[in-house]
Image 1 (cartoon, rainbow, N blue to C red):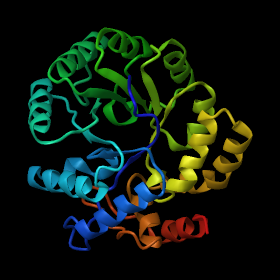
Image 2 (image 1 turned 135 degrees about the vertical axis):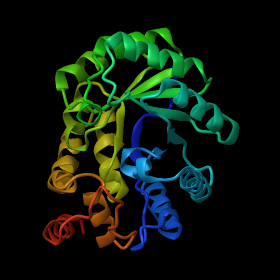
Image 3 (image 1 turned 135 degrees about the horizontal axis):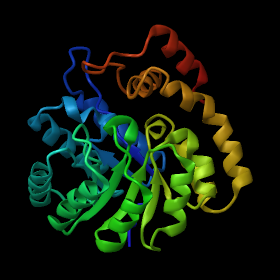
Image 4 (image 1 turned 30 degrees about the vertical axis):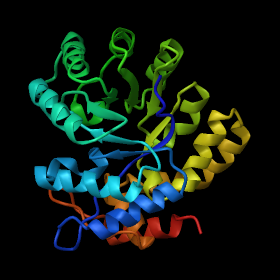
Length: 291
């Protein structure tokens, strides 16, 4: 049974003004979110700008986060792509080095496979490891949606496919997943601003961007919703809703790094082809941060 429920955080990768990985800030960020009460960490996801990190940097980032976490909460490592054999090889490498609770594996992008192609891809990925796999459906980035029927088929057929990060933003699809998922399968949100209605539909938690900067406030929404206290969940949700909207106004992770910069946790810098948030947005974000 998947234990990855509640609030996961898709960690950013802090950079210096010279666009080098800022390991001091990274360790400070990990302590901020762990002490803020999140339930698990996600390393090298989209928000971590993993596509712009060299292999050596990826290894160093993983190890710095593991060190800072000091075994306190589970961690997940991003391991996906559009070349199935390379994903399998990457997971085999990670299996030898780390004790990740799961791998977050994105729907193959660019190739635009059929639903059967998606099934066969994740069948191969799941069969290459005994560790848990979290499916990651994010059609806004991959150009293809993995249908609920495909995700549920994978959940039923492979015991180590234990969760999905569902970032389609389609509430009907989310409801289909939550209603039909096996009891031991976690349906996690990938859309911060939708977490309140998604919890009411029966979803199991989230892998959040906003939790980088407001881990306690975001966890309060999720914990109340999972407890069935939606009056309290609504109150917490509406306190941070405007901030969540601002964080994505000029793309991710530019917005959340602007917020983290305002909090003194890391700098606002991102790597090309991304650019940092504008001064105007940075000021809006700083003004919207909880006091």
